[in-house]
Length: 132
Image (cartoon, rainbow, N blue to C red; front, top):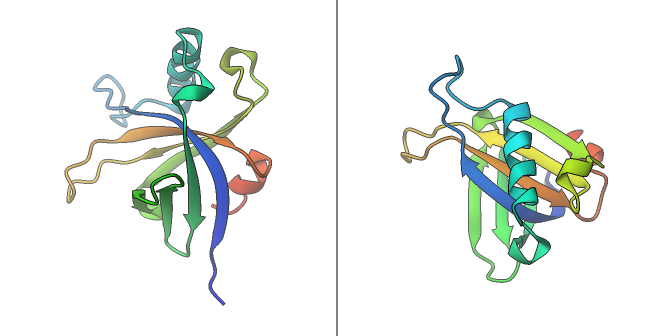
C-alpha cells in the first residue's frame, strides 16, 4: 500500500509571480488572491478551467489533466510554498473552495515561480490542506 492521496480539482489559473520589489522575490498570497479576484472580475469563468487530478505522494505533488491524461506538473514538496485557501470570498465568486500555492523557481528546469489556483471539487479545501 502506498502513501498517496488523490483529489479532483479544476485548475483555474496559474501565473508567474516574480516580484522584484518583494524581499522574497515572489508575490505574497494576499497579492496573488487580489490578482486572481481581478481576473475573475475581468471575466475568468468556469469555461476556462481544466479538470485535473492531484496526486499527493510522500515527497511530490503530481497534477494530471483528466481529459488528455497528460502530466501538467510533477513538483517536489520542497518547491511548494505559501499553501493557502480561500473559502466563500465574494470577490472570487463563482469560485468558493479555492486551493492556492506557489511553486518556487526551479533553476534546474529553468522554470519561474508560479502561483496556482484550483477549485476543490470533491472535498472541502481545508481537508486537502491537512495533507501538506
